[in-house]
Image 1 (cartoon, helix red, strand yellow):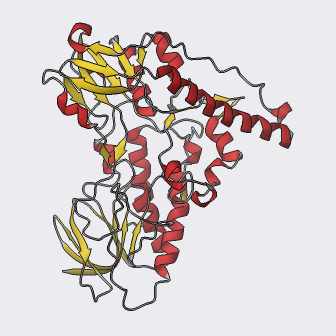
Image 2 (cartoon, helix red, strand yellow; image 1 turned 180 degrees about the vertical axis):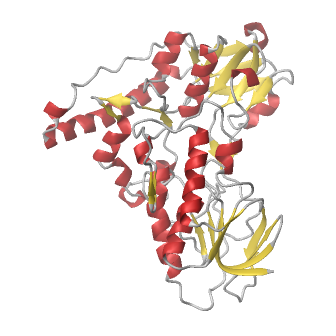
Image 3 (spheres, one colour; image 1 turned 90 degrees about the vertical axis):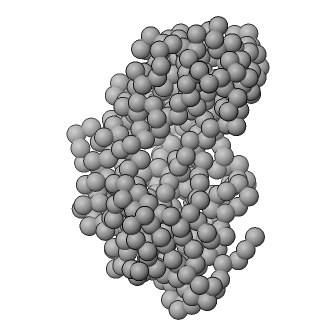
Length: 420
């Protein structure tokens, strides 16, 4: 058995940020990674994927983007290289090929954890879970009712249009992933139907600047979970319908409709080749447009209040999404649809976590990354503390908070974890 002060599970942005912050405080630690540094960016990303955030936002503790294209969007390969260089520069003690099998309290009377990996048995005083927000594809239960001759694809398995069987494609979900894959498939000449669920619509650029520049300027990313009346709802708010492209163009329902993609309401059921759809497209689009107007209105008011009117462009009109008559069913066989892509988000799974810190939804109970079990922390959760907590830039602030709390732990014996 190997002993260490602190173990970090995961060598992505959250784990590497935590490692740098612990190193700065002289805390002895090891970072455990199931594969290599940035494994998810290596093995679970499609070929054309780019960051949603511009490169200038790729900031981590003691590290920032210094390349030639600060307003561009890194590819998955470039992100992998970026994290590798950060790990090397920070001297991150990463042990690869170390998938976690079990994490538990060493003993109810000891202030320690036992952690078993596929290659080692560890004992640590502290553990930071940094496995990320995009852990496992969230495939709905109705998927099991889909006909066997229709291929089911998740974004983690998708690589490019050639990786999907010939024929039409039904994409389920219209946030960043869904609209990007629908756009790419349509551009490749595929017949594409997009089942649209809740989303937050934003333009890639507004009044001459990237939308993230504006969101940062008006303080959106600095808002904390404590400032909101309903933290649970805030963490479940619809994801952004936004794509990072070299040409900075919008990819949204308007552009997809113009490309020939058929838009429908949310999918509600499947029976073999028959897909049932809600008649809620108009309502979903209206809600997204309301959110769009609120955000752009806040930006416009900020421009007026700070005297930026002469320095930025005039407001651009936002094109309306054309919504036709609702479609309640699609016969996939008749339509020639041979594949369904589940762009329906992610969920977190912790089958190896034998510490009672999960809530009824299977999420880790925490406040600012600190769980109710002394010595157990988490990083990279959506809206963990700040609205940008699960962005590359935002995770660094949370890592500083966790590292500071961890480094100040002085009690020789921690009480047992409470049970729920």
